[in-house]
Length: 121
Image (cartoon, rainbow, N blue to C red; front, side, top):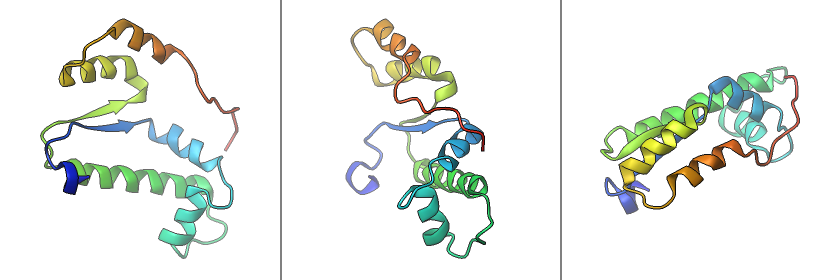
């Protein structure tokens, strides 16, 4: 992205509570999934009995750290947190000079899509 857009783009770092994110990743364990692949291909020698939740926390930290490093010299950026999505969307809207129906956009944050059944991890 830096090669093509540099500091010309407006970058958004979409974030979610780290515990909620890690738990979400940890319950989606299947062959080829990101957490098993991260454990075996990036972390490499993770002991077999390491809980996927621990691997998921490490993955979240690594991804967020890499994004923070990428964005460190960007002048047009914002952090967008799902927990404060309505407020952050309005801030984003204003920062990019969006036009249209802000209220209709904000209402979408009250709609749940692709919800997973709760799983205890």
